[in-house]
Length: 116
Image (cartoon, rainbow, N blue to C red; front, side):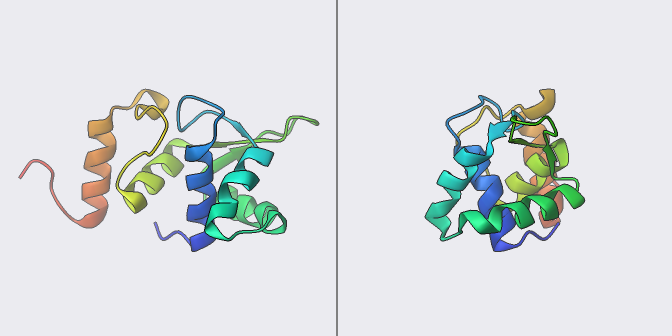
């Protein structure tokens, strides 16, 4: 799946967030804003990018008032890892999957059979 620069920036910001131990854990939106600033993104861009990622099924949004959090879905974790080649800061077994599963998904996205 093709990710825009800003979509990748948000996924990277979630991965770099100080909240959560797993790429699939929900993180506070203020943390995402803080972490995506390194890519030159602005806080005003975040709602639109989150909406785009949600429509693609790559993130889930917490709908509880006062709980402004976003989490990466299994598909989002696979797309992120396929795009960057690794999971920077979080535990690599998102949703109980192993790193090998994500590595195989990344290679499949590139058209490479990891068993060859």
